[in-house]
Image (cartoon, rainbow, N blue to C red; front, top):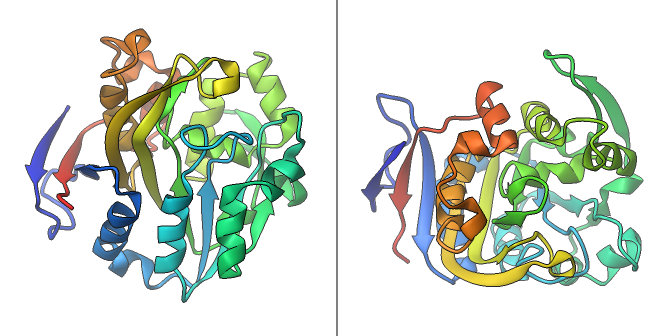
Amino acid sequence: MYHTRENDLAMEGNDINMSIVYRSKTGDRKAFVTYVLRELASKIEAAQTVFVKVNLVSSEPCPTTTHPDTLEAVLEFLRDKEVVVGDAPAIDALGTDRIVQNSALKRVCDARGVPFVNLYSTIARKAKSPRGYRFTFYTLPMEKDLVISLPVLKSHNVCRMSGALKNQFGYLPRKERLVMHMGAKDIHKGIAELNVAAKPSLSIVDAVQTLVCAQEARHGGQPADLGYMLAGTDPVALDCLGLQILQEVEPRLAGASPQDVPHLRYAIEYGVGSPQFEVREITL
C-alpha cells in the first residue's frame, strides 16, 4: 500500500515512518539523478569513499545493463569523493574481464579517472545469517562509507523481476550463483539475505526502458517502454513500486503482489525494508 504526494521533496520523514520513493515520468536519466542526489546531499556529504554498484550482467547494452548516462551523472556529482565502480558480470562467451573492458560503463569511468573493478578479482568472505542461511560474498562494497546501486527494472526468468534487491546478486562469486540458480540453495532467500548483509545506501532504478519475458536479450528478453526513473534508500519499497510499474507491460506479472515475488516477500519478512511507502513525484 502506498500514497502519493506530488512535488514535496523538502520533508525528510513523516509521522508513520514510511519509506520514501522518488519517481519521475522522464527519459532524462541525467536530470533525474542530479535532482535526487541534490535532494539527498546532506546524507551523502559526510561520506569520503563510495562504491557504485552498476548492473553489468553481460555485454548487452541498456536495458540489460545500467545506462552510461546514469553512471555519468552519479560520477559527476561525486567528483570530489573517492569512488570505485564495480560489478561481477555473469559468464558469457566474452568472459567477464572482456565484458568489463568492452563496456560503455568502463569508458565512462576511464574518462573520469575512476577505477572500474571486476568483483571476481576481489576478496570474498563467508557469512551466516540469523536464520542459518550460509553464503559467500565480496566485501569491497561494505568497506566504503556509501554504496549507490544502479539497477535496471526488468523481468526475470527465475526471480520474476529484477530491480533494487536483485542488483546485489552481483556481490556473489560464480560458485555461489551456480548453486543458487541450480536450486541447490534457495536463490530467493539468498537475495533477501544478501540485502540484509549488504543493503545499499541508495538505489537509483532505471525504468525508462525495460525487458519483458526475460532479463537479457540473449535469453529471450524483449524491450518495452515504461518511461520512469525511481530512487530511494529502501530497496523493498522500490521493488514494490517497480512491480506495479512492470505490470503495465509484463502480462506474466498481471495481478502479482509483493507476496508473489519470493525474494521480495523474504526481504519484507527479514526487515530489509517496508512495503508501505510514500511516492514523491518529481517534475523535471
